[in-house]
Image (tube, rainbow, N blue to C red):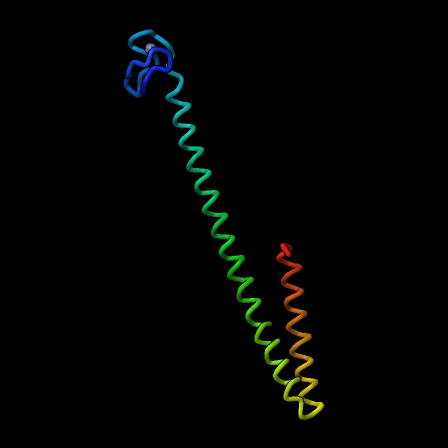
Length: 109
Ligand SMILES: [Zn+2]
């Protein structure tokens, strides 16, 4: 490492500068700094993984009710019988309920 006072290059193990005897306290500080950056890196990685999981769950949970919505609309549009309309309403309300439920538990909308 380089002496912070006079700029002379010293071995990393040196505690004092060979030129001006300035204490080279930066050695431990540097190690701690690199450790901190590793922790930050791991932290950001964990965050991105949990974000990916969250969006994966969100995506999956939105596709299923989306299919439900389409099914409901198809049943309602065809609507030949009251029975089919009831099934369509069930699909629609069920899928809307699921969407609202996931919106509430995800807490970001
Ligand atoms: Zn020095």
